[in-house]
Image 1: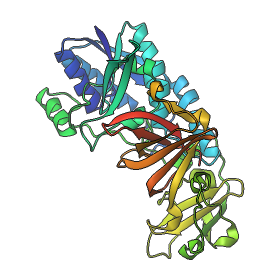
Image 2 (image 1 turned 120 degrees about the horizontal axis):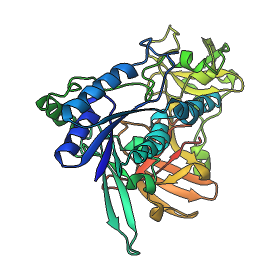
Image 3 (image 1 turned 90 degrees about the vertical axis):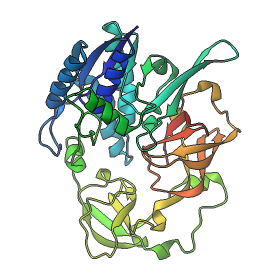
Image 4 (image 1 turned 135 degrees about the vertical axis):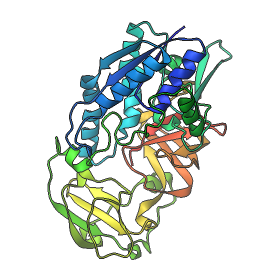
Length: 390
């Protein structure tokens, strides 16, 4: 069986390659370059050249063939252009989720197949298994990784059954310290390499500078909303009203400063405002793209940061397990995650003609339109996901 490992130059994919080789698979490495532009990157250069060098050394050390592919055009079209479009609408996209759906398990997968691969393996901390249903059909499952501190299943929340049928996750049942130990034991060049951060394949960026490639800066006002504003307000009794974010007007608070563009900021954001005079940090609680106003609240427990429910439009609901798809009128309890590294939250899914509503047992902080909500079964299987509409 021929397996293509997506070798990034990091320790996780390196150890994944090592384990596949030791298991007797016919393994080859494929390194993909997805980004050229350095605009907005904090290091001032593209790190891919160093990553490729390390990946090539890892492949040589393990004794597997090394290939290179440039997917920067398709990455810009499917991931970066989507990012610009979402930020322009005042939504906050998750490029890592899109990268896995559109690049690693689509464009990259096709390149690997062209090179003769039967499967594509990555260094994700998640697990996959399969079973045969009552109709004789093979069903694939994504489960949380064994390491609770590194579980990356959330980033794969948009994969489908066809993509999963070709996927392998060799380190999904290993904890990170063990991955490091294996890398050192095998003397891999990536053993001490730090984990990558920032936008997938772009790296850490100054987001406003990065977005100014297409979204022009425009000065607007920052309005502070005080806790007293919420004293006589409730989220209502029905799920539709509970899922709607509070709508603010300039007159509801006090103008305390200016910003360079509401589209550059996201719900729950703390850094980047540069407004002093407060005991506790200011957090973004809402942004009005049309009027170019940002609304903020003081302190991480500001009531404007919390909501009990969210809504997902019908065409943005994705079922990893189509056999478990909910129909209008159905309700189920699941464990839910609305951002990476967030502990799973208990909630209730309500399927309506207008889409999916998720009502949480406890109000959630920083529900952000454009991000993905993913729902899990009690055994850690990720069942589906969707883009948060409001």
